[in-house]
Amino acid sequence: MGWSAARKLRRAVDALTRVLAIELVTAARGIELRAPLRPAPATSAVVARLRSSVPGPGPDRFLAPEIEAAVGLVAAGDVVRAAETVTGPLA
Image (cartoon, rainbow, N blue to C red; front, side, top):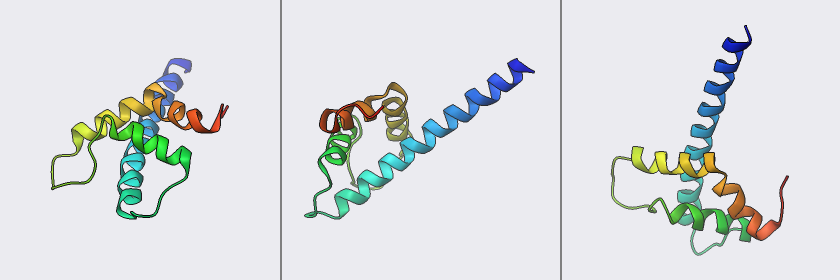
């Protein structure tokens, strides 16, 4: 039963990573649409890190490559590290 539980946990973690990546892309677009208002420094650092790999709002396009890039950032911990450059250690 341990093997089955571990597989279910892995699928759940992978799904959570994907959900967080999609939320990140969506939140970044929302923040950019609120310009000239500026987000907090840590949020700005996270959006800047995302934008180094994922382009911002533009014409309609297929978003799967952008979502996959964001999944990679979340899975690698780059998003947390970007926030920690401003806030210090979060854990």
